[in-house]
Image (cartoon, rainbow, N blue to C red):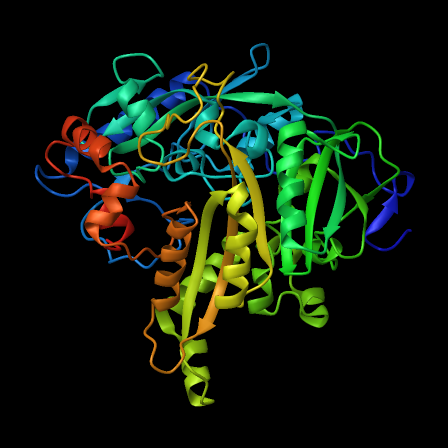
Length: 491
């Protein structure tokens, strides 16, 4: 079927893997990078001894309120690009503040992409490694930090060290993921890349029960295929207990037609309408960013009349994030709701991971207790062979601060929105209930958003025994916040 959003290839300009944004940042080169690192170290040295250290940056993909930082921050403005790309071994040296948008813009013309490209354009490589990231290749490639071969870190002590899987700083290499900048800041990361095809062809497979959905996830991860067709990308959406979809993507060199979700059409809605679909690799990578999954609806960006006048260049996650920041600061919508007699609302913005065998049960609990849909699903596995750590035995937890076990399939479940604060309830109660349920289903959650754990429970869940010696070695004076103070204390 042909529509405004699905057009035959002959009606469109030629599409190749170099179909990228008009502004492409070319690799900076080693000399420019070394100068930027020296400027960062100089910035550190200018902060008075004993004073706290933080980054001075304008953007963030953290989703929790934080106390206003005082004093000067480290200047990282020049650490936002690609240093070099080596096509033979398929690796890239990338600065820590480089966004995935700019990273992909540099690698895609060479027919390469990172092994995992998180779904939002302005997530930085350093942020995805220290704070974790995920996407639809994670069922075969793990998380972004699992394709890092080495990284240079400016530690809390002000030292520049290179961490590798088996070198002098192997403890930092394994402990850096999920440390959220509390041990140091990455300034250069060498990462693996993989080859791409020009297009991604998808099948949107519907399931009428959560148990069938769970079983299908396990089968696709185990076999790397579904119904006889290879699967290179795997994620999904739950609309209700009786309507969910897995999106099964495959690299393709030739497709009959292409869809375009950067205009009036909205990607997540298409899952209900199209059994098969195809996108350029560039548009596939950023398919969720245009409407911030489905969260743009809260700003009116999905209303047909407003969408026509809302510039396509401003339909992107960082714009919506800034709008949320303005609401957090000024509370305009909250005041309007109060004036209209509506209850205050609690923000429930979380990504949690549960073993695949508990996915249906958790989703049933969630749909009964937190009536918020749609819900995103993204299966993942630790890279237990072929990655920088080599062969990892089943049951091992190779990354010190995040409890993922090798040999286990997990499902990341993402839900982002607000719920009314019911009479007799306090702000935060729903999030606390989610934390308790996740633990009850043998899962854990990401720390980019609100967390309510008490300190003992927190350290038991997030590698306190491994974290303390890392903190002592790499930030002995405590110039960086510790992980609990940052994630739960909102500092």
